[in-house]
Length: 261
Image (cartoon, rainbow, N blue to C red; front, side, top):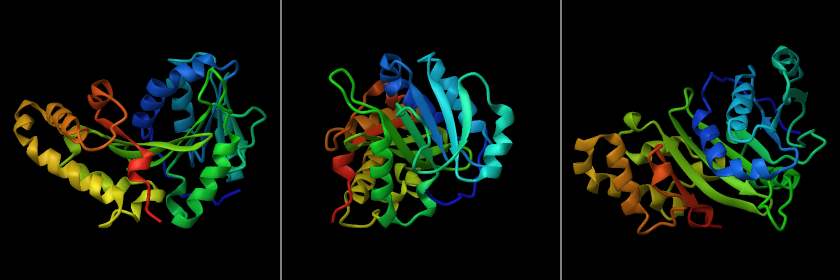
């Protein structure tokens, strides 16, 4: 289910997303009996799936990765990279795995779809996640967009119940102002960056906090970012803390940025 993407990819393009997943979802992966992670729509080359296996196994050694692609030629081409813990399968949004995954990563997949299609795709993918239990929040869907070399990235994290958070991540030295990240908003938000929508107000306030924190730039881009996010958190429900901010990230509750209407 779905359509073929352009398939462009580069090694290390998704490193920011992967490191965030390992940091915030690693404990869930370790608790799972047989954790399966899906790299959905990995593209014309399998680098992202290979890297995902390496990064997740650094925090949850029993994790298995399944690369899923709707183009059968891409699946055939990736077969040479299969190894213990990593396989490739033909499929799409139906997510053709026998075990409900602890993680589905869909990076740069929905960008080509209409905004009206996003909610249905999210529901379908969330329904495939491992369910929540007494001791677990369940599986995680991470869906977002980044630039060609992974310097700027925005993603939504969703559980079986639906969207939870939005994360903005960047190589700090490449940033002129936080609203530069607007061009990488995921499909659910990119057309909502207009006056009257929460995401527009958030980026406006982010830029204002960045300007107010300008004196900290003399101590480096990281200190400028840290002060900016600390001030931003006074008015917006920031869901993480300085340990992630230092990585050039900030995560905000979905409800605060969700589209109106």
